[in-house]
Amino acid sequence: MSELLLASALGRGLTLPPLPHTDDVLGELAAAMYVRPLRELRRMPREEAYLASSEARLVLTGAGRIATWHWGSANAPLIGLLHGWEGHAAQLGGFAVPLVSAGFRVMAFDSPGHGESAGGEANVPLIARTLIELRNEFGEFFGLVGHSMGAAAAAMATTLGVTPAGIVFLAPPLCQVDRVARLSERLQLTPGVRAAFIAALERKTGFRHEDVDMRVAARAASFPALLVHDPADRSCPFRNSELIAAEWLGARIAPCPGRGHLRILSTTEVHQQTVEFFGGLRST
Image (cartoon, rainbow, N blue to C red; front, top):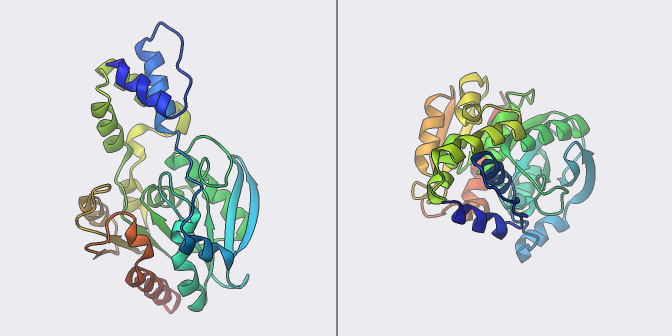
């Protein structure tokens, strides 16, 4: 039923296409809606405090101007922080001071279409490519910390040339196939519209639908990963971490019960686990 898709697209601020609404037209609309985040510019007081101790820089990339924030000495090993869908850099700001105190420098950024960065679209391959451009600007990443969709982008970036010593995934998703299937079911898309939706996504991202999957990076990884996840996470099921870890040599899961999908980012124990993980890699 196209009515649900049309209503959802309007809710994302998209202009509806003119009639006739063929499968291809509706598939293109579904793809445009899928990659269009709702921009969130509000920050909690503690998040403002995180950024207050940083140095802000704008970087021109292929996706437009990207807002970045930096902590620590320019000569220290670099840790990159990647937020999730409809999030922003400051959500991971609690990791900055503990990592800097442990001898690292830290960079967080608003992904394309998010926060203070340019653009109206975001997807995993686009964020991965943006991360590569930031690597070219600021130097190779010793480590990456990715939350939710940021975890997927961090993983994909390692298949495109980013070579960290290790990576921390916080409440990771699994694959685009699952997300598209859930959205298609919720919007009651017909098989024809669903096929056109997937084809449009592949054109937009430059990746095959089934390859936007964290297990692709897992099978190729030559460095360890720490997966921190609440077993009761309702947004990204804990099973995702189990499936990723099963194919990632050297991966370890650290359950974080009771913190949900977002509170995990402000959990002191998670910050400490991350510091210990990267500290251990630095000493080897």
